[in-house]
Length: 216
Image (cartoon, rainbow, N blue to C red; front, side, top):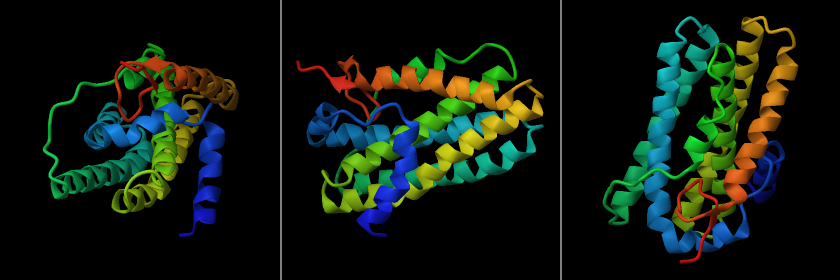
């Protein structure tokens, strides 16, 4: 796929997000490549776990079962691929504490159904979109092998965010909310602002989804 194709692929993803990755975060990427790869692996595993938990919790939701089953398989494949890349580079698996990103987003989940499910799915869309945008931004900065792998991930990651949005709308319609499109759009706009703040605010922990690095 050509660069122009990648640019076209990314337009709706970047348009969905409230901001692009700050240059300061990208400038630090090569200094923390081991952390990024380790945390990327963690993110793939956590994404698979989240999707699997949703499948069990909302087993009555047929469309969700089918789409998330596919997502689980893809996320676990990516997890294995990152582990293989780490092994090839002589990087050992190490425990890594979580950053603030996922927790900051989870705070916005409403505590009642079906709104809780809708929020989880909208947040899932933002996590996938941000991952996609970061792979795209990192690809030309890292070495050729890793850059090629990040570009390979763009197609599936961009589809994942679209799947999560579709599932959120389906959940709203299934629950017979009065104005499902308005409810979804309202949550998208709210979560977009929260996600933007997490990405653009100073952050003293460098992770795959962290904010602007604080110089120490």
